[in-house]
Length: 284
Image 1: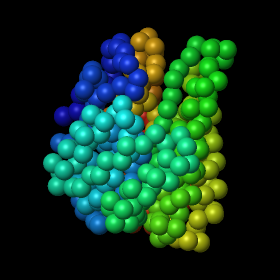
Image 2: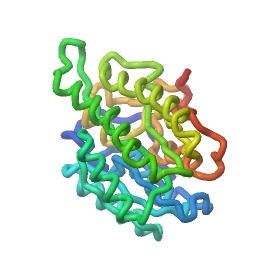
Image 3: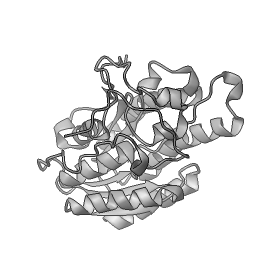
Image 4: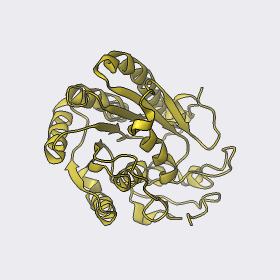
């Protein structure tokens, strides 16, 4: 049974955070997800796959029959190995690709390493993201704005550009956010990147459709991951997600289900769509 996330206590972590220090513990599907052979033989690359949504997506996709490659920052190596162990425990394959995806060169290198390791690629999930909160406009450092856009927008663009030919007949899933529709003042730059990604998904769906590539997005709401206590003030962490209609934050595994659907052949006629997993917060 997943831990109750209706009353998350105040806490903080040093960026980029780690799963081991989260209270309560999030559910990534290690025990709760039952595979139904929905992704047999699929080769899937997931950026930011060391923890949170990325870890859960890696685990559940492996349980559905996929082989996985995940990217992670050097600081996230321990969590990445834990993800790899969870995938392998489920009987899957998980290749680790250490990469900071803020430059075109890094994205090209990561793409090639994943393709070589998996023997090809059928699905790309662009999930890696950076955020850091501030109380007012004047407090946002210029270098942070550049980092947020480089990680969240430029990285996915370069990665999709590099892998488009490899992905013909496959699919791309991009992680956007409820912040694209209902932005928070303390996440000004992050919210802007997520709105940009929504636009990019629609454009890429039109651009790549004639190659048989479906392009979609998942827009999570408040999901309990290390990113939250590592980037937000303790008073913002306390009760995180309790303002949703469902009254709580979501577990990473609850979002991962959306990626399974969009990556699977069940979604063969779905492209250019943003699927919200927000606990009831609107995405329109």
